[in-house]
Image (cartoon, rainbow, N blue to C red; front, side, top):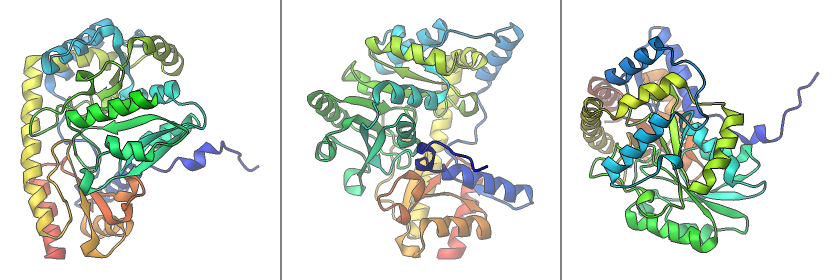
Length: 386
């Protein structure tokens, strides 16, 4: 019997970075020395105060379902975080705790996307965004961006790309795969465009806390009408705990809660109680030291790669990625990444994971491993390309 699957499945492409990670782990299990620069996950373990809070929660029997939108204590703690770090008064009732930022993307796609509608997004950009939209019979409307735009979708580009079925805009700041940040004026422009067009604005802020020349501005400092996605994965170092959140306009929360009840029942209970410790002063000191280490890694890797001929027009201001052009090496992104992994033990991500625009001419390096490992990778690259 031939299986018949929904047509949408064919339109959802593999997340190639996961395939790279799988192959890299296979090679490592065979005894190969692999430098891991593919994953969007720093090598730091979750900070000890967070782990201690999880252990305490387990021992206290905090293992049952919670409210679908999260425990009140965590919603309050996130609200306090916006007050202390951004100077913003965000009501806890506007905060919806989710199973990772992916859970947030699913909820917002279902909330905002009608079949046949689309949302504008930068190309290159985080690949799963368009696939979540496809899941609910919408489409990601990719807008090519390049160095002249600092790889970000701005109001002028969005205005020119707006279509009859466009329902809004999704942007990320800092962005994956480029690490570029939207300024306050650029966020203001996107907000005004969406207001004028009657569209929604979603801002992915999951790399907030990982910006290196001052804090990235939040759209919440401009408007209460936008939807913000954030996560405990990146700055807070809780990738495997799968915990994120949405800040939504108040009127949207009951609809999000209704869907969360049906789709997820609740976020992970132990992860929520652990995350309460993410905001403790001692935890924040650990996380801020780690951010400084990421700066050191970036400041080592960026000049090393550009000296070898990789085209990286700007030193990124946030996240932990370098999106590098490979024209000098006259290979496609897949062939280049495959050769580096199989023959030289360097795992990086092909540009085709992030969109269509010039994707065959780019790769992404993640400086998520130690300085010693980065130095080893650069030495291998220098032996090949110097």
